[in-house]
Image: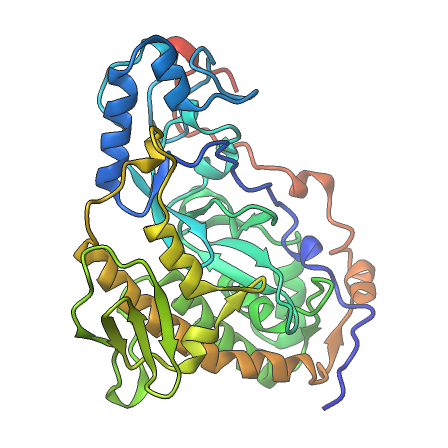
Length: 389
């Protein structure tokens, strides 16, 4: 099917105008696939003194043991300089460390070179963070997550500008214009769902005023959003298929292989099946997701570093996460052909960027491209002082 061009489709950057660079750690050890290792790393750091503590910390231009920074929004972490810190580890939180890879983070502003506090202020159970990932085989893949994403190289677009699902991060007037053209008012998640399936190369998102085409795209996109966010009921493969551990995984697997004929994932002598080919072949930005996920759990940090502190074996929780990840990738792989088919399908009754400009939706006012003023409570600044915002 020949591709369809959308020369006047609005850019994603106009439809979701507020975007933030992803948080930048500056050092790898404050994240890990398991929370227990992070607490041990922290304890090792604060027990060390002088040059030993400095070497373990891995200082950068942005963060040293003497850097004074405020507390992360939400009250995570201390504010005294790390050179004097001796308290317990802040409770680790879940973040998205790589595509489809949820890991743990020590939520302490002193450990993170660029934490992007504006993202922390709007992170809650209602929020959806969108990250644009390149796809060598077609249009970009919009990753959606409930976790704060620590993925480099892409802008982060929160769906909401305020906590509690308030003030959608959409071009002002867009929902009203879509309501007038579609005959019913979509909600913000509908718009995101449509964008997930309709985004084209160049990160443009053609819009339709055809109610039937809109409903089909939204239904497909909501399915993808549910799989990516994994909120609520765990997904299942159709036909009663479900990946199981057929041969026990070794205490510390070192290799990962795929047997395409048997649809089996081999972790050394351990065996998981069935693993559909679509799950194994699923890539983001040219990187196979399962291989990247496995490498994050088996690579060893350098001797004498905090990153070298890892589990002695393979925790059972990792096996459970692996089985769920296989299912998610297999189901998303089944949806991908429909996304790519839509990329070659004409959008009927197209709502163009020109139409949005004539309606006053575009250009987006500059205020919509910056964070909202969000401060529900006092935030602690450096050395316990109250932050002035």
